[in-house]
Image (cartoon, rainbow, N blue to C red):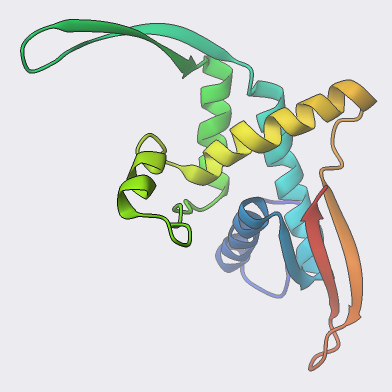
Length: 170
């Protein structure tokens, strides 16, 4: 995670801050921070989304055979990641923190377990299943790749007068 200003911190703390804020941006879609941090977050988030957009269609159909307790075999088709998508998924997992899905308000525990039983890494799944198709379609329609984030300036922050901004996904 190089290529941005030092933010007044040493490298491991700086990388941790950027990784944490990129995770927050991709999970929530919007984040309030300072201008210099937003510029650093923007670079990393754009790279992550571009990687997902370029590889999200790389899937392979596989037939899985499973046996139940009585020894009866059942076959089912499963979509697995292709080699390019798998590499991109692993790189993205190294660039963001693992965020766990939260139980919705008034959702029963059984419904929550049923909804999340197949999802091991919810943020990575959200990137590949929500953001990648959305931005791929945008790329096809407008011919524009990139520009997935927007920085809106709010003015000086009270207390230290740092330039406060909102960074959001377009």
